[in-house]
Length: 534
Ligand code: GLN
Image 1: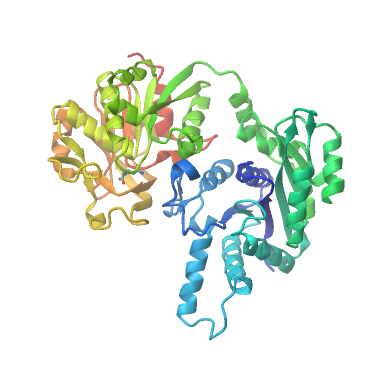
Image 2 (image 1 turned 180 degrees about the horizontal axis):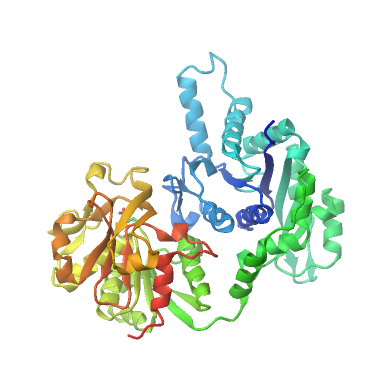
């Protein structure tokens, strides 16, 4: 008989933004380090169908999987902590499950019965979880939001039912809670955590593991207190103070014996986890690294670090490889276009990154940054929209002053970036982009081919517009070259400036496949170029 899959359900209490995704990913990390085959999935109770239409400044980055799902940024953490590639089955939002359920109802699948949240919606959730778990030793399932949210009871009921179906030796519940610190009495308070556990219990779920976040060091009694008031074994409690880096969390869990505890609870033979390389990586990350490069990220969403999560992580990961450090400097794209004097912020930068983006706002400022980088021999890395503005910049620098993108001005004379043929008529609607993995062929001898050390690559995409082939013959005059193309030669995937320290831009998103311990070649090339002479 096939070995049963072991389920680990991760829920949250007290508040959101506690690092529940990081905790789930870290549990995955320490289980994978024991040689287990681990999958991980996020269930989001929001009524959205996917994350494609969510505002990145509110919700953070939209992470794209290799099969083209537009997902929650937690999937990025999962991929980075587990060094795996996930698929759409790892991101489940209520909207998608409900839509399928309603379609089934319309098709008459329920034979005249009333369709209910319990059992029909819960069964549909359970089915998606079981399906994703197939073929793995352990399947981790994180429920988005916190216990008590209006949208979520059916999700808790689903994991409760699944838990009782597979039995306690095959499933485990982890709750991530928060312990506030009161500065007046200099105390860490556990009451909100107790209440959150009580809410979870009221849904019939008793947590086996408690991951308690705190911003202050706790004393020796905190675990005891949590244990006796929350009814969780002391050995199943991990205190997670603010980490020096998120990548430290697996080690903190391991130090507190959580790996061993989970293995025992799940009736698995414990093994020593292989965490040496990860430890070394964390040592590098927390060490004082030099030089510190100033990297300007030209963007319109300046208020939320999460919006460009994978880009930042990829920049940092590449810097660790050179034992260097990066300081991210936000450059306000709109201000660049509006305020002439503000352009001087670019003078002070070691390198410029233009990340992906949609819509008109801020694009002219991004073109200004790309033109500046091109003219002044400043290393430039363009990601998706960052490639499109790089092409516009090169064209304008060469005198084609009206060069632009169809997204910006469909009536302009020189649309060097235009709508992809197969996207015509579908502009501005959700879910109609070129999404996910596509092959790309690199030009032999190009900077990109040297960095990748191969000529055929596969990268993740999320775009509607592309470089207009009618202008490709002019690229040489503009000082750039299309060094990466789709295998049929139709789509430009990478452009490079021919005579430049580093001016490389891709139509795809290399940041999604960068890992803290396996940095992406384009990011490595970019960071390496920062030390070269002007
Ligand atoms: N808005 C551009 C397009 O749709 C770029 C997209 C992106 O940067 N992800 O092609």
